[in-house]
Length: 598
Image 1 (cartoon, rainbow, N blue to C red):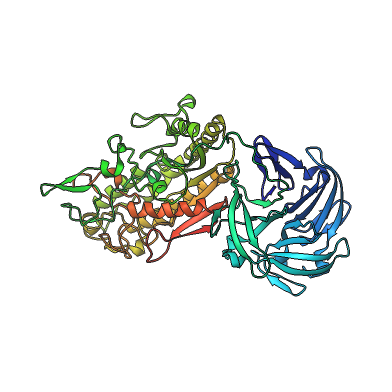
Image 2: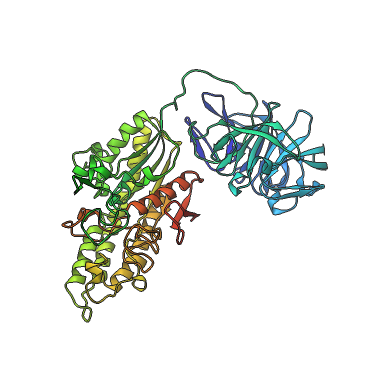
């Protein structure tokens, strides 16, 4: 197999010009591309013909020793010595331009040589040559003569649309035929009757081939279970063995969230906001119930045991609201956490609420689970989120609209002064996560995602309450001057997000930008109203803690907001590793979100 980027599996490292082998128990380096001058190229098509020959295609055009410039629609033959010390020569095996493969989308990204001598190929985009045409989810059969003067014709071998492979992510980018059906890998997430998986997985097709394809796909090789989340860009199946014995990845799978209140589930008690503090608060209080007709309130109905120590891990927290199909969804985050609460105690980490540090808790999880993804939200409390809210609220409530005391200039200076140390703490937290996973015997094969924060209040132009008077305080629960609200929405939140993105890039982890997640769903927005309706607010309004709920719940995504983030996380888990932005869809519910690259 060859991967779209560098990997390290089972102690064996490979770049995107290399080929790894898997014998059912261990990985080995089959082909070292850098040894034979392929450093600048990436393999995306592969067939191992024998112990000293293989066919290769590349993602782009480039120079191949002994041949010269090779196009991405060509296939070269390598002959020589395979293994960690690769040596040998190349020759042209299939010249795509000779048989009409000249369009940009006709990059060969999957190939397999049949026993009959015919060649199977798939292409990155649409295909049209020698009277045959199709899409990136199809496989074509070439019959003819090979070499520098290639000649022959194509026919449809597998019609992917007949198997419901119609999504962009279901582009076949790896294939192999060993006489026992067709093995394929896809560009991204794949879902077909009988099979579902990701871009690092291999599927087996059994059935009838041709323009009228019919049959079933089944998952053959689970790449994440074998230690990788990197897109498998090329594959070859030579033998099908069952090695038997225990599988070291048989531990139950898990996705883990770590960090502060924005990911612990703070404010998950609330479905929207309601001014009347009595009864069930207009149906918004999920912790309300009656005993003999008298209303009672028990936060532990939502936060469980963490209601007592203030961690406030809600039953609708981001990870629990996701639909990720793993054995365990585990929330280690704690409301109020700072970066100092992440590292192991042996490295100076500090626990909260009578609990060990979060990295120490992660070590216990990793000892008994195969952790597939770790999502981290941290840094906001190091910057003083709560203090900013309190200061801005005091300034609003203690000055008149004709002579307002605003907070943004003072608080911007405070944030700027704290940003460097806060981001350094985030970087250390990520390092600690990696160290814990390595110590648990999982040095790779898992994903780390750093996420940013959404703004709970709108910009000035989008408030539904006047800046003057007491409605923003007494009715809306959003007591901020216009200029302070716009600063928080359009300057502070993007600034924090961009700095977190820089840390994620420096630490080579994924980044999820949530800064616009609550757009038009904020507290006091003209697009929202109180209650649980379709235009309910997705964040908790500011309360004193004396009338309903806890003050610490203020200005956090409520149950709707957390369910929306859970939807984002589900989509992220099903996507290739990278940097993403998640936003809501106007007028849609929390289970309809938009995940976009970048």
